[in-house]
Length: 533
Image (tube, rainbow, N blue to C red; front, side, top):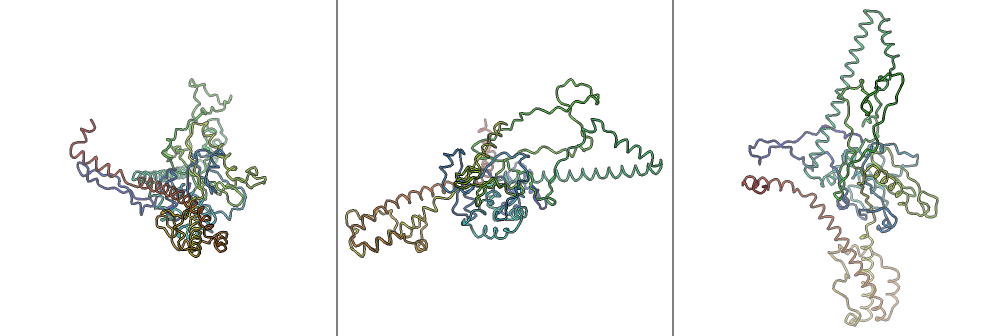
């Protein structure tokens, strides 16, 4: 993942007034509203749902998929717009996925800022769902970035304060501080690397100057002979000590993103440490090198004399990463913000010869790839995965059905009023007080919603031609039963939304400050020591 472009953030410090001496300096968390960084995001569906809602997205929801077998996938609300896969990222996953397939119709952004893969995956999905209702901010952003390349889009996301504030709203104080320390560590490593490169350049310049002086004093033959000897000497030790070239991606020179920095998984399972099943590789033996046998069975560690000790990079911790899979037209695409391009996984279509086997289900293209990935990781001891589905929100269809139901009951009741004024007092014509016959605040139904709803043609034909009010009363009963079912479904969906909001509220609440002040108060009252005994 390319490093975040921008100046180094200054570390904020504050004096803890609750300390015993009043002089203890502690690191103060930055202001979320103005902070320029990003924090790692948990794979909690409730957080994604609240994030989408606050971004102005309507009509989709995120839910966890516990298994990718066909029966479980069939139980998901249809249609399934996309899958989000959380897994432990490996260095070999970073590769150019360009397949030559036309991609101009796909909105795809690279991950430029650290810890932003959850939002990158989400935006790569919602910006490719046709007809999806989005808020003004996201619509304007999509239009503004529509003609940009993936890297530039990633940079624009990094500068998109509206989305960044929503993303970071789920961060605790410790998350903000950890992200700042991570940025400072990266800056420190970059400075150390630059200093090492400068030292190498200085050493090379001095060496060249010394050789030039030696050549001037002793003549070209001796210096040339020494250089030729060095160039011609290829002992096994010097050959083995040649440093292996390592690709270094520059944010200014290459659009390829680097490794992601996300580490957190859903609290439902603690990630296990990966086990390295392969032993150390033994160097190839050579009869000419004359190396003495070692008593230890461990392979000899080849010294690298061409690299400064300060240049040695720590092997990066393999963190967790979000990747999106979704169908666009008749192709299935893997959209990983750490790849150059979206990856075309194949075609699908009912009765066709695509990668889905002609079933018409795009998830049949993705499921084998996910199965193989998880099986390979499990062999290495890694069992921490999360799969989320971006599905059609059923409440959208329920609300539409409720509008049509209310519209039909209004038309039937109006016709009954014209046929018989006192029809409501007849047996079988009762209407419960829960039945909706017009606008309703609890269900967010307004007159404009009903005015924009068309009366079903069958109801229009029945109410305009029927002359028997008893027949109309019987015709009305199924609509009452149907509405009760719709209201129950909407109430269940609202309860789930409220539960998501509650989880987000608890996540966003700063319990740490309360606990610290409470513990400080107990200590000041000399009670804390007794409680700890």
